[in-house]
Amino acid sequence: MENVTGLLRVRVVRGVNLAKRDAGDSDAYAVVLMGDQKLKTNVKKNSLNPEWNEDLNFCVSDPTQPLKIEIYDKDTLTQDDKMGDAELDIQQFMEAVKMGLADLPNGFVIETMRPGQQNCLAGDSTITSKDGTIAQDVVLQLRNVESGKVELQLLWLSVPCAPDF
Image (cartoon, helix red, strand yellow):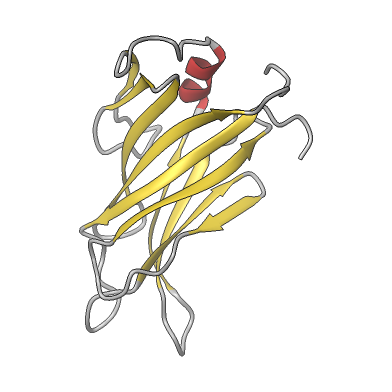
């Protein structure tokens, strides 16, 4: 990819109280999209509260691109059932990266994002310094579904010789 400014590591931590789509519990997996990049987690069988704890790395060339998350129930004989979706605007996160504040003490709160009509945040989300980089813990309320949340952790990974943005 051209003009990559760094890597955004998205840890898909877990789903919480996901909507039931099968007679039993669902076989859930997450798809995370950023621009034309699309990555997915493994399927967690028989759980409406799946624990993924999987890291997905995205090359960031356009820091205005939002993260999109879609949760699905894996089906064998039919099309996978959608269990909700959410979107996260990462511009505030990217502004914190751009300010070069990573050398602050671990856990230092750089900014707090609050839930609102323009985002899918389920609660306050803090952007912090962590081990010499920028991190953010996020809980997103899934849309277009009866219930469900997804927990993510964002972490910035610098790329040597990457251009400033």
